[in-house]
Image (tube, rainbow, N blue to C red; front, side):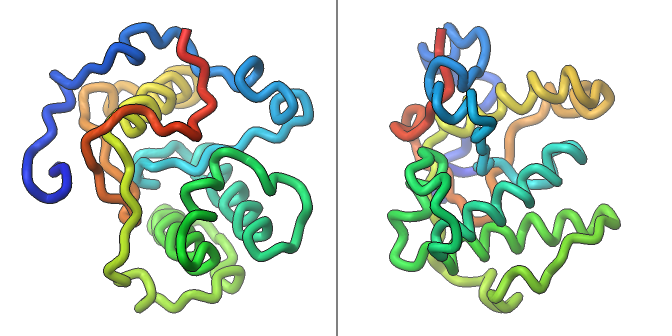
Length: 188
C-alpha cells in the first residue's frame, strides 16, 4: 500500500499516540444527539471487501441515506460529521455514487441483491481520476474500530484480518496524517 503513490506504509509498525490510548470507539459521548436518536453512521474509508456481512449491508443503507442527504431529499443527517468529506467535494452526489458503486460491486461478488438502480452513475464513472484523500491515522482508527466489531460479530473474519493491513476504499488515496478532524470517535 502506498502513501500518495510514493512510499510503502508499514502498518505493523504504524502507531500514533491517539491510537495507543484508544480504549473503545463510542459515539455516545462524542455525538450524544446522534447516539440517543439512533443516528449513528459510518461511511468507511476501508475497502468494502474487509467488512463482514452486517457491516456491508449497513454501509449500503447508510451510504444511500448519505446520498439522499446530499440530494436534499431528507432533512435529517445534514450536519452529520461523516458527510463532511463528501459535501466538500465539487460534486458530492457523483462522489457518493462512485463510493456506493464499490459497495455494490462487493455485494454483488458475495451474491447479495442490492438495488443498482438507486445509483445514477455509470460503471465508467468509477474510473474518474479524482480520488479523495484519507489520512493514515484515520484509516488506522477505522481499522481498529472494524476489528473490534469483527471480534464480536464474526470471529472467523477477525482471525483472518487481525494480522492483515487495511486496504482503502477504491475512492480513497492514503496520505500521511492523523485522525480526521470530523471523526467523532472517542479516544479515551
